[in-house]
Length: 538
Image (cartoon, rainbow, N blue to C red; front, side, top):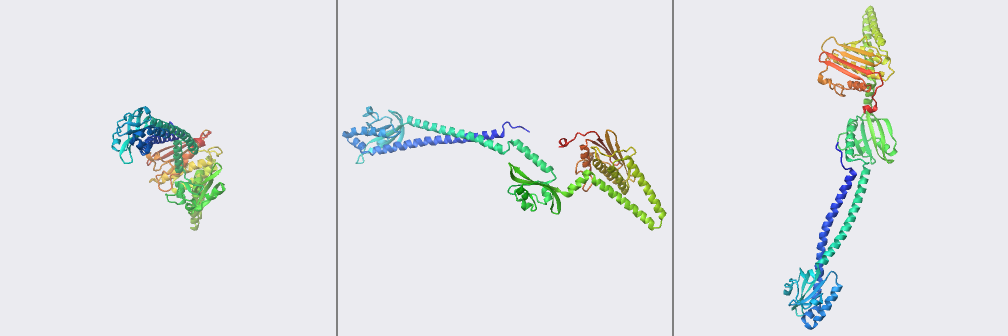
């Protein structure tokens, strides 16, 4: 898996900082443009308003109409310049363009400078930019009329552009200052946000979260037990396929539904309320008895949900019987009982026919043969469970018309070591039963299964040989896979159990087979301390 260069916390912090920087930069850009346009508009409005006021002043139009009163204009202009803000230039001129008032008294009587006064002499009001005696200016021109409505001159009110630039720069400095403060706050907030998100994710990185999700999904798919989890609001947050099957539900919108709507008899609500776990409780669902465990989900001493796992009791019992070899023992007892009943029927029939001698001879022959088998088996096989299994298989073989032979070299002590009786019963029972199936399917009359169980100081060897139909090369690759079988019905479990038991005991199984010639299976179990443990099998 490719390792990320940056951690999640760093990524979130950087992303947040970048977003803050882009946002503030965009705001600064548009604010600067707005501020520039606004300053210009305010300047234009300011000089226009002052120019209009000045043009309507009686002192101005009387001074332009009457030469004797021109001396009053200059002091008036100077007083206005002192009282107005952001206006540096006020000029009053007559129709000849000769200045009557000017911020610089020395320029009074001189011609107007700039070349942009021609339109105002024609009676127009406007704003322009030009270079005057005081520098580059933004100017507002307004014509001046006397009481009779005759234009007698004009006024020009202006602001120096260098002062406007200073105002812009000052505003930009303030904007940069506030933006910097905003960026600092954004950076601090980004680290606080990333830290909180990291904490809420339990310090895990995205790759780790993704890996955990895939592992969880894989575990849920592999688990045969039904699993249902709810949150504090009794809503289902997790359910696997096994639970859906056991509950008899249809796959669909189960997540998010109330547990009482989906599973009315569930006790998860009680577990959620009491906070007490329940283990190995029986419960009936759809005419099926299940064994269930229920535990609360706790986070920081607060119950945030509950989870239940459950499985069909019948399946658990069946699996326990197969693993411990009980099913093999039961089958052997059934075969013995069946054979015994058949023999009783024969004896009863002979007696009813009045042939007591034949009945007596039959009983003697059967007894002798059974005693021979019993003596042979008990002499060679000292473990009672294994011996009982083999005796049962003799009866089973006779039912099927199969000759089961226990090899002369067979020998097994009573089990009190790590290779216990249950393990041997599971291995022997399944291997012999598979051999019976193989020879029963064969078309020839002589059907034989040979069994060898030999123990020495180092190992136990089990060999089962049959002359049955055999196994093809392709099938040999899959015979130990759980669920795989070449026959119909609920099969594909026996050899898988055999393989699991052998693996647990660090043993080895070898299979040789040819089609229509038979199969030879050899199992070797070392008697030394086995190395496999929970960690090695996990």
